[in-house]
Length: 460
Image 1 (cartoon, helix red, strand yellow):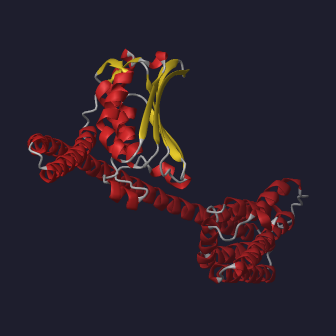
Image 2 (cartoon, rainbow, N blue to C red):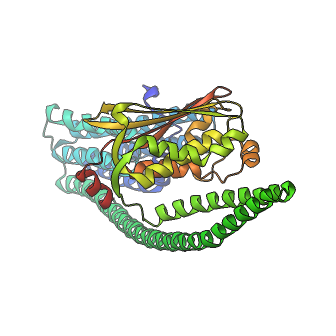
Image 3 (tube, one colour):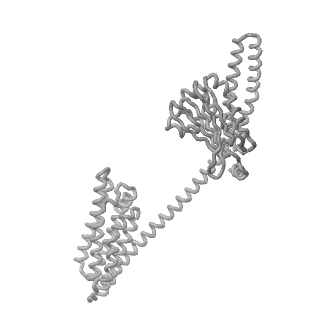
């Protein structure tokens, strides 16, 4: 039976602490009941004997309780078991006295016995309620007494009426004392719960206010970034345009070294423009400007446009790019801008981490969940991603391989933006990968965005 109890649990320790701290109170009420037994039995010797038995058993289980609370580790279980048996012993002693009073004390004895048994149950529930199983075990003797008392033989013996009334009065006083203490204790508990509930509500309101302030600050930040990145694009486009003109002029004059320098300026400016575009896309999403603008899409042209952006980089890395579009997936009705940003980020990521390899882009149409889905899979033969890192690749500013990332450039935003854009269209981006063998990123988005989907996206 001891296996039912976990003597390391905080509720069990709390119950033991409450039981030990109530020692004086229980001894006081026990003394009152012993006095009542003396009156009912008209024998102060019997009452004094009962008083000694109650004091010894109560003090004994309190001593075991102290030992249980002070013990640590494995010894706590054994000391907890002793404490439980000590409590059970003191309750059994108390219950035995109630049965004796009910059988030998006549009418007043039966009244006192009932009040004592009921008081024992109230005491157990008052001090041990934190550990329900322990409470039920220690309350069982008193409950059995109350059930057995009606079946005890009742012999009305001549008793002193005054002594009988005094004994019954002691029982009533003890029982009412427990009830008053329980009421006061419950009142303090209810007051504490109300105060805790009020404080919790205040903290919740404060947290919600701070969350709203943080969201407002985040929106302001995102709007600021969106404006700033937009303003940065204008002079940067001018730098790219003039550097291309200089490159063409120097190449026409045969000044290859200067043409190469101008080409480096163009490449760096385009790289910076790509980073600004990523920040612009992320800040626009955070600012809530991610509503859908669906239109008819030529899927092959969408893919070819994404390939054209990375064509030079792919050629410099010795990569080949293949494109296959099934006839069922040739046309779609979706958000061209978001789908294009999503695809560009994934294709750029594949080219960035692949050298002298193959990037295969396949578009197909599948049916599932009651609708048609456009599936665009971008497979590469690059460095791959370890399984433990796959769950992090779509987190903002996450760089799985910092060495290669720094060598190739980037801020770790591309895949995060791709996933956010896919979600905005009602789809998602998934990935499968094997280190050293390459990765496959798959865009899954509705082939045709329905009006219901548009309303849902707008509400979101």
